[in-house]
Amino acid sequence: MADLCDDDLWRLYQQGDTQAFEVLFCRHYAAVYHHARTMLSRPDLAEEVLQETFLAIARHADSYQPRGNGRGDGSSGASRAFRGWILKITRNQCLNRLAARKAQQTALTLTGLQWAEPESSDPQPSEVAERNEDLAWLEQAIVALPVDQREALSLLIHEQMTYPQIAELLELPLGTVKTLIHRAKARLADHWQKTPQEHRP
Image (tube, rainbow, N blue to C red):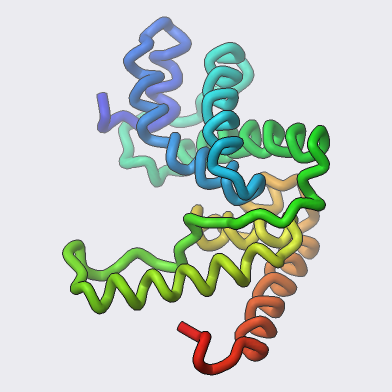
């Protein structure tokens, strides 16, 4: 069953196959959690959103109409459409929390965003230390970004979405998305320039 694409699994779930839903959960829970943590900056709230998102998905099984009709490895257009649908539900859950708690005004630590995966599956201690320094600096820089810039940048880097895909998910004009990401990168570059040499990774 693990070799089925998302849309084929969703069809099975709509027909009552709960194992198909479990496979979908295992396939997408990390992306949902990461996106929620990116928006909310708190792991405890991200865990709550993770549960609420998949509960909402289970309760509204008819709200997504599968497009795929074959087997895939998760990289098909149908799978991307399904991932986008899940992340949109995740985003709405987060926005509800942000509005209710006025979290836009709260400066909290953002963790978990990585620029790239390590080349080696068994890195040397020196590589681990250097990577931790990079992430620590990146966390400090990203936490200062406005939430809309932070979210757009995360989708670009972590989800490897294209600009049009980000625009569709965030329901924003393409030009606005490009501006958000450009400003986010400019802020990070400015932060880098203002960071003393001895504190840079």
